[in-house]
Image 1: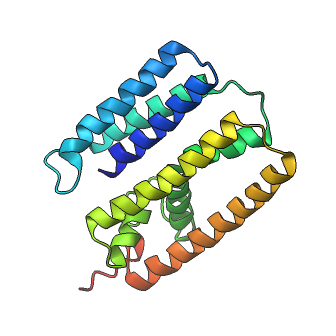
Image 2: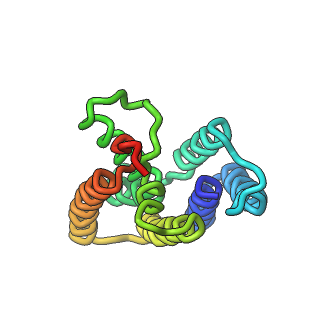
Length: 195
């Protein structure tokens, strides 16, 4: 249920931004349909899952999320827009960054599949599948809410700069922490095959 739930949260956040900023009604319609489709799918996909999405489904979701977001943007380019965009896609962006960095420093092909994503690291810490997914949903909701605020409210530049610095520092810290846990617990590319 991770991909469908994350996509549903992002679709809803984008729909709120589209509504408040008087966005294109057709784009809003696609976002609401995407939100509803993800919720409907999630009914059968949440743990214990009866059906699974697969790569084709998650790639389609990513494509639709990215394109509808680009059509939602009604602001001129600014630091506030960049930060709002990072926040609305916070979990997927962090997971991709972590995966690429982990594979790069291990001298593995960047596109080589492994079982070392953020949710795998959380599972290695003893969280159940449900708790892992719910924790990631909570993180998505927090960052999507911050993104909505950044994309609809005027925010002073010093606040944007401060939040940006804290975000970059936090992301670097989290990636290093996840890497350390991955190595310690033998997750993904660090799997020793023991146990």
